[in-house]
Amino acid sequence: MNSPFPDSSAQPGVDWLDQVLREDARTHVDDAGFTDAIICRLPARKTTSPKWNRWLPAIMGAAATLVAVGILPGSDVFLDGAADLIAADISSPRVVAMVGTLVVFLSVALAVASAER
Amino acid sequence: MVDAPPFSDADLITRVVLHDDRNAFAELVRRHQSTVRASLRKLTRGDEGLADDLAQETFLLAYRNLAKFRFDARFSTWLYRIAYNTFISDTRKMKEVLHDTDENQVDIPDDHAPLAESANLRLDLDRAMACLNEAERAVIVQCYYNDLSHDEAAQVLGMPLGTVKTHVLKAKEKMKPRMAAWQKEVLTA
Image (cartoon, rainbow over all chains, first blue to last red):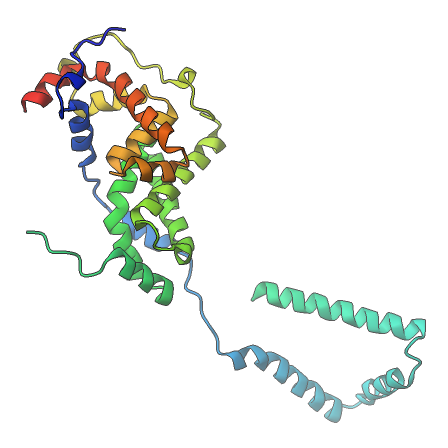
């Protein structure tokens, strides 16, 4: 297709289409609330809790357990169970099953807790 | 005379990364929103709604990844790269245009009517740009609307430098006949 205008290369230093494009590029787009919309969509600020705060639930839980075992009636059952477990043959299938179950439960609890954190 | 901004982009980025300073990020958005939105409007062929959605996505991605910005390029160049990748990703999702081929050209009426009489300059420019394939349009947007050098445009677009130069030449060759009515006016202005 023949160009309807002379080749601009015949006019050194002048490319009229460059001028048109650069002029159009100078058009400013008004913010019109755009920035505010972005800021509203930013993720919530991270709240950093002190290190001791992370251990507080575990410490309180352990303390509450000890108090409960020492004070509540019938808590001897737990102590007897613990004593039986310690005295039992560690290689017996019953003890392995119990310890295995405990390890699984503890791992799941830790995984859930760390995922939520 | 316009005063220089009190904080450079680098200062603002540091404040955002170190202190999660939202005001600093808002200032970055204010500084660059016009160029990002304008270039996305060109890439989306004038779809302002889509362009603004993509621009929002661009700035949110920039915020999330600001700590990875290495200061080895201008912040604006980094931002344009995110904007272009966001556009490409959206285009792929929409399955509209996958590859740059001439068959993908928009059906623009080419009635050889004197364009200057039928519409204003911007409209004619948009129509002329709509005749470009995706790669050519992307190169024109980066080099003219984002004011990048060919080298920077090559980095943003992930293209070899030679390809960028070829696309610029081809794009202008395609656009000139469609903008011919404005040539005299521009040269005599």
